[in-house]
Length: 454
Image (cartoon, rainbow, N blue to C red; front, side):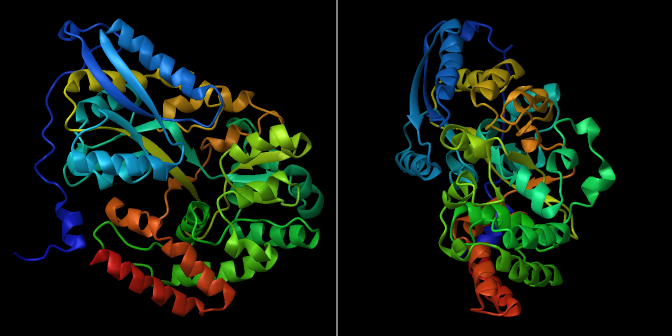
């Protein structure tokens, strides 16, 4: 039997398995089909915001009571790796939960065991418009024309800049709330367009000189992927295309690595050993002027260092020669093929992603969760949270940023490997520590990517 390469697998995927049939019910309405009691086992993400998971569970239980369904909820995580371990065991055994919340890329690891959810996705898109491009990239198979997962807000988050208003104003002469106000209609497009990586580099120099450097990990961490992948893309550097062709060896990659060689001179020296919590601690302590992170660091600072939290402002990333990109990690729901009550499971998923339920979920998450349907951006939670008032308003995309995940635009199967192996942060570390020249680091990266594409 001839060997099938990873590249061929990505092109062929699981063609032919995406036939979808069935009709959707009106959300929340009791279906006659459920007069015989259905049972659903649900693996729900265990939200770290106090009380949020109680709201999620109450929504499910209320729907179940109305629809003659017994809902059994297990709280999983909150660490993605723990959820992935459970999903792997269930996929091998062919039994377990009926519905699970999974982290980024994970539905692709189990795609052959996932039930297509085209009818649910099409219903939601017809009502609310298309899912955003990143949610679609992570949940939809272009090869099979099938939604093997549903983009969900619970746990989904992005990585804006989180900056000290006072430090930027005093030492860099940049008024962040004026540049990125808590009202998109008041943005000055010309000034926002001038927020570039060159401008940010000059600000980083001044902030470093004042004793308050910008800090982000350049290490084998999720956060390393989540700011370096988008930065590379903003210079026109992408690791691999959808078809599996290696594209990392480019002028854009060299330009990005040369830029980072200079930027690291104005960052803490120990960033190569930072973990995912290090930049949070950096900004919470008051030593840092800027990081890239969801509102979780600010949320902790509100409790532990309220005087520092009151100075934090979340805002857009700088623009590079190829555009403005922001990192994001989006969660989704899957339904396993062994689910016995498939229509009940689909009806529940549709109900959870309707506006009324998303509204409650977004409020419970206090602005941390990021919706993947644009109409949900109108929720007032991002305007209401503080201090300072409006600090997380720009956590939702208000301008020209494109949300991406490290490894994009490679096929998600390859993207998962690029992200999981931390190939991009390692390349950057090699180039910026002097272990290799930027050109040598780029060639090393191309060789690593070839092994993924084989």
